[in-house]
Image 1: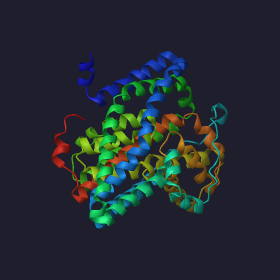
Image 2: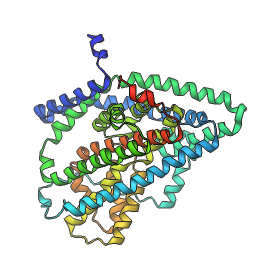
Image 3: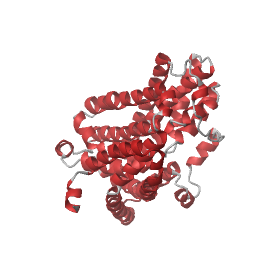
Image 4: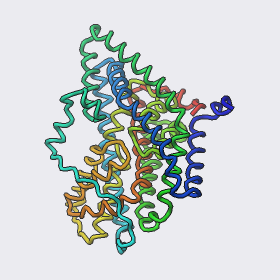
Amino acid sequence: MTRFWFAIPLWQRVIAALGLGIIAGLLWGPGAESIKIIGDIFIAFIRMLVVPLIFFSLVAGVAAIGDIKKLGAVGGRAMLLFLVTGQIAVWLGLLLGTLFAPGSGLDTAVIEAGTVPVPNETTWREMLLGIVPQSPVQVMADVNVLPLIVFATLIGIGILMAGKDGEPVAKIFDSGSIVMQKVTAIVMELTPFGVFALMAWVAGTQGTDALIALAKLVGLNYFGCLLIIFVMYSAMIKFIAKLPVVDFFRGIVDAMAVAYSTASSNATLPVTMRCTQRNLGVAPSVSSFIVSLGATVNMNGTAMYMGLATLFGAQVFGVDLSWADYFMISILGTAGAIGAAGIPGSGLIMMALVFGAVGVPLETIALVAGVDRIMDMMRTVTNVSGDAAITTTVASMTGDIDREEMISADDV
């Protein structure tokens, strides 16, 4: 029995668990919440990996690049792609919201409002200061990913600058990165069980009632995310990376499945990193650096939804938006997506940043909170797919990818 189980590729086990979880949840109903603890345990295990995996992998990845100039080439290209794709995503959300007007004529009385999160009152100065890790230990304890990335990158740069004197430290981090990859492989075997429990819980507790009231918004959220994944990312892989699109998506199917079930970029981080290295042939140094960075700053699904949700709220409450407001939404939508933590529901809090700037009532957040989890799962798939697409594209541009390994990978 055990041999049969492990003979099935992990992605097939995950997809099967996802489908069975949905069926079980719809049949079981609200009682499916009783097995959510299994999914919670799975997420707890996978979150356990986030800090040590980012820290060891990012330091080892930066140190392995071996040249400060090459680090600039990799990081610069990645950040440029993050910003460009983020802007495209926001404007796509604005376009969909303008064309289909999901909030026009909506009867808010039939919507079960979710809990409105406390708006983020942090100023832009405090946000910039928060990027600097004043206490690296506290940053790790709080799982504050962005300053952790800054600290790990600086350590890696310091190792590069130290030259031969830094080689012993580089070996320590390289060994730590390998150990964390092995631990990740162990935890990944729990994925089918966690996915089954989480999907049963979502299907059993949400059902279809919430989708009826907001079907248009949910549909546009999924449509926009699919356009980003299969048009924008496919174009990047085909025309910039010059790689087979089908092989790319086959290589990241594990990460997409986990992203959809957990709705967490951070929780999916170990899987994304493993897929880009093992299935797509990206060099570990480049993969560790860009995937870790992308899990925090590359949120194209969230950026698209920021634009769409803002127009939704404006249409529900009759707020007229000018072109200046559209440009403000595009800027803050990208910034809000970057600031959104890679955990379920974080986009709700970042909405307050965008809504407040253009006069859309914060009550809009309450309207969408009831079905946000359903939409968040698809947005996370978009975010994670984008991390893999940009990692693969940059690796192709810098020659840090084994093209033959990507095309011939059969164990994906």
